[in-house]
Length: 78
Image (tube, rainbow, N blue to C red; front, side, top):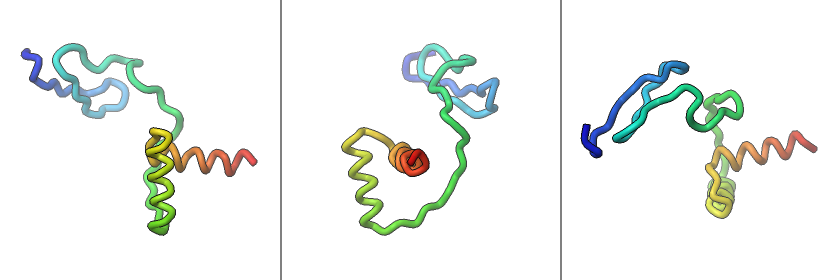
């Protein structure tokens, strides 16, 4: 297999497709550890609020999900 080929493999745990490049592959226990349950939601906010979330995300090098999760955790910790 050359360095430019891609391997597609199925995780033993989740049954999801994974992609790996050149060497290695999916290994049990490898990768980022989960922090909770993922549920998809749709959130309607004003452009102004989305802009603030995007700005916060960029300034702190976080995803939108991280920014929103931090806001919710802060709210419920009070």
